[in-house]
Amino acid sequence: MDGIVANAQIPQNPLMIDPQKLPEQAAKVAQENAKYLKKLKARKPKKLDAVMTKLHNETFQKIDCLDCANCCKTTGPLFLPSDIKRISKRLKMKPTQFEATYLRIDEDNDKVLQQLPCPFLGADNHCSIYEDRPKACREFPHTDRPKFHQITAITAKNVAVCPAVFAMVERLKSELPL
Ligand code: SF4
Ligand code: SF4
Image 1 (cartoon, protein in one colour):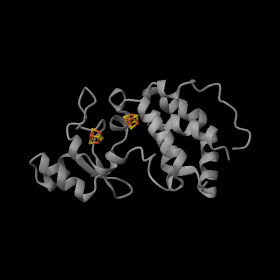
Image 2 (cartoon, protein in one colour; image 1 turned 90 degrees about the vertical axis):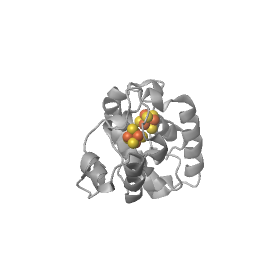
Image 3 (cartoon, helix red, strand yellow; image 1 turned 45 degrees about the horizontal axis):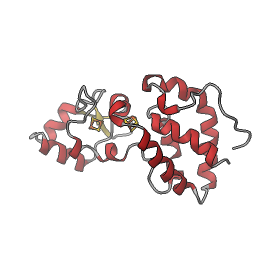
């Protein structure tokens, strides 16, 4: 990225950011990230997926999702028909009953949670339906998926939700300057 310098306002170890303060910290780098991620999408660097896999693995070795659970508290997953079938079976509910109890249709016509934090999140940050959780939960925050350049828009949003994504994007800007 042209002329990127270390942002003195960002804590040295972004993984130490309190998830509740993440939106505030993310706002400070939002413009810079938008510019960088736009270039990333356009240029599709050959090394991108390899660099992201490394950053993803290194970051999640240092962060324990059970200390955070911010994604479960502040953004819910979308529920696919296969998720609804599997989870309602686990809960011994009819799929229609499960949907009426927990889900609503959002502005994109996706089935999402009626309420946040997620009703399946325990006080100890464990997921009570972990083995059967939605595909979107299993894949969040998507930072190890191939063709990472295709998900720059969602990554820009997730910087304000997930401390791991915040940290990865900060490192990506240094490791893959554009
Ligand atoms: S289903 Fe489980 S993993 Fe998914 S948001 Fe709810 S608590 Fe989190
Ligand atoms: S995926 Fe990100 S937001 Fe969700 S619990 Fe883990 S570190 Fe927190």
